[in-house]
Image (cartoon, rainbow, N blue to C red; front, side):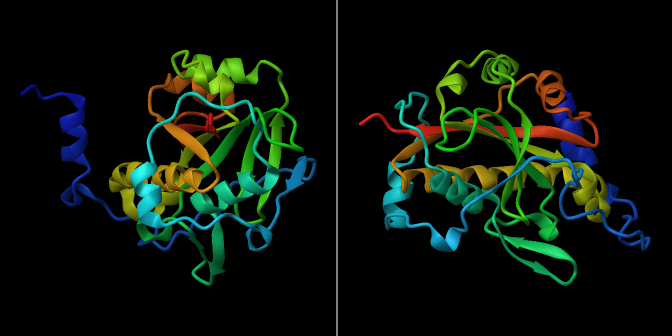
Amino acid sequence: MSNGIGKEFMEKTKYKYMGESDQEKGIPQPPLELEYGDDAILIDLPSVENIEIKGMDLKEAIESRKSLRKYDATSLTIEELSYLLWCTQGVKRVASRPATLRTVPSAGCRHALETYLLINKVDGIKPGLYRYLAIENKLMQLSLDPEMAEKVAYSCLEQDFIKNSAVTFIWSAVIYRMKWRYDERSYRYLHLDAGHVCQNLYLAAESIDSGACAIAAFDDDEINDLLGLDGENQFVIYAATLGKKIL
């Protein structure tokens, strides 16, 4: 077996290599979510308490879940989008630590992921690129570039089903939010956290007659540039398309 970068990653992120974290040094923790300017264009999302979703047995959802790459032309409702966002990054409450307690687990309750959305077909929302503000339960408009779907698909190695999805979730990692506590070990935890989030998306999709497809094949530099991320302090870690099933 060759001594490649993957093997080195697993070795150098072992606990024995962890140094003193910034938390242990008494350095204040970073913000719970990314900040934004006063001029940001925000869209209120329906509260999950007011959204009616058909009941579905968990066993049934697990059995029927599979990656879906072909979608019906039907749009999602804004209520369905809000439900999916709540299932994948919803904030149940902000604890006094401070920390956000969410609908998915995260190492040390650090929740270092941010959710970006390529919206193609959601009723009442213009197609474009958005970021989810989990604590406020709002969308922040980033770009209404009519070529955005084409650009996202290109950055994901030209996987054209992205252009036909109702929405594509793009999760980024804000590394210091995790590294503040876990030093180099953080890089392992970020990928575990992303897996928790995407599995919730798969299962939630089943309850609204939709399907999802996880995407890990993307040009890191291309997609980070597209989202305006520096690729070091914040970088794309995972993505997934979603759309209505063809019945």
